[in-house]
Image (cartoon, rainbow, N blue to C red; front, side, top):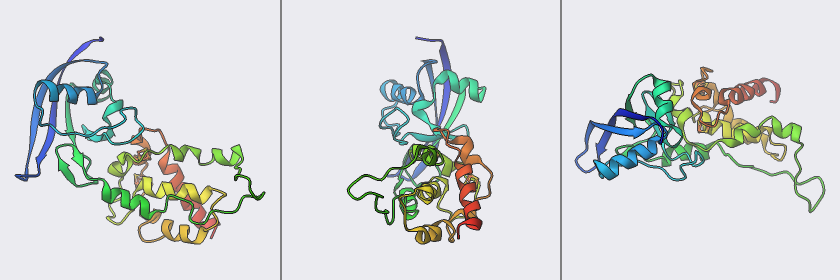
Amino acid sequence: MGKLYSIKLNIHRYDPESKRSWVQEYSVEVSGILRFTDVLRKINQEQDPSLAWMSSCEHAQCGSCSVVVNGKPLLMCELLVQNAVRQFKTTSFTLEPLHVAPVLRDLIVDLSQAYERVHKAKPYLIKPADPLTEGEEHRISPRLMEQYVEATRCINCFCCAEACMSSHRHFLGPNAVMASIVRLFDPREEEKEERFNVLYGEEGIARCHSSQACTFVCPKEIDVAHFIALAKECAFTSR
Ligand code: SF4
Ligand code: SF4
């Protein structure tokens, strides 16, 4: 069962019907090996069924349970109580919804506009090249794949977008531009010019300040800032 912790959660709440926002405090006694999603479920079952939050796979694969805990964007399904106490050096936690998307209710946000930004970055092959041998699948050498495979682990949890230090309101955001950068290195992509226009355009990587906050918070441990830096380098070498 693990060590028991008495923790306090200050949760930012929002009721769309009355348009009221407030911070509600919950005190719970929980095992250190429970995750924050388990803690919220326990609150729903034992104290307040009206508290709304979002999760799906609860295996850090879908990116739906991102919230801001004590100022840091993270996945609730990955955060054990004992690790949170160690990491933040406290048993009091403030939970806020992501600020990069409009709040629907309590910790639930509407990610449709955020996903639109990812779509704008064209995270797909715009013009796939024909395979070298007709009728065969396209083969990519492991060495080439190594250069960008890390970026393909992105789950679009938007934690990096939340932490991003770029204040430019038109910036597509770190995960969106990284999804485009991946296809810049993908040998199957033939359409380079259109991709350059996305990456080096008004909403692209020129808006990045290279602060690396995106890398710091990524729950999939992707060096997001490194990929953006590679794309900045390409601006001088490939065009
Ligand atoms: S390195 Fe760029 S993309 Fe990453 S957080 Fe900083 S400004 Fe945003
Ligand atoms: S790069 Fe990391 S932090 Fe950003 S959306 Fe992808 S998984 Fe989340």
